[in-house]
Length: 280
Image (cartoon, rainbow, N blue to C red):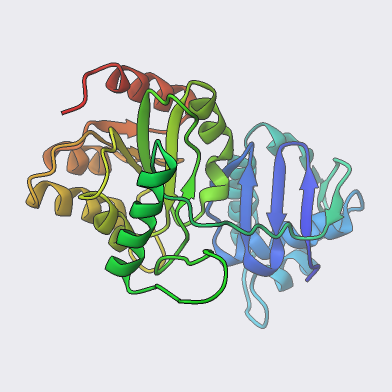
């Protein structure tokens, strides 16, 4: 399996981690679909026969071609508009007709940045939160992280609002984060429910945005919302996910959430009016 990031159109795929991004949004793939996609991208634009694709998707197993056809259908749906590049070679197999490039995996390093409008209050906040989380070290630069991910700050001077964004893949939300920052909205990113619950009592966040599944917790976003409401925290909560079911929407509403957004436009429309309201 190739290393690095395989790219074409709006698609980025990391085969070693089976991670797919389409137009900046994370899309989940099952193992067979991910293996098939990796082979097609590696061989692009050449045709790949069905037997090789079946072996890649289900190594060592006897699987009929119907399973391959279903996996290809799932892949086309996952790739969105770029799914048209996954072409059928009748009587032979499939191919990715687009030009594919492989580039090194980008490495990101984040520093801890604590909300604060003035240098003095920022310094005090750093001390409070590091002591509270038990991560203080007496030597070295302040680059401590929380349990799952660092807090990433994006607050401009004279900000008009503050968002706590909980997602274990913060890089997926960079476009949306920049949208809010351009409107002088501070965006603070953490990677776990535990980190969010530690920060919420400390700062005046106006809105909480969360993904649904994180790690081995498929309902982590719902867990966070329920924990907030159990504490009496009534701050607006929005679930941001690529695909939501009616059941998920119902659970979020029943637990006191303000809604579910699947696209950046839906998210902006839901969040911006909340920032216009006076802070409690």
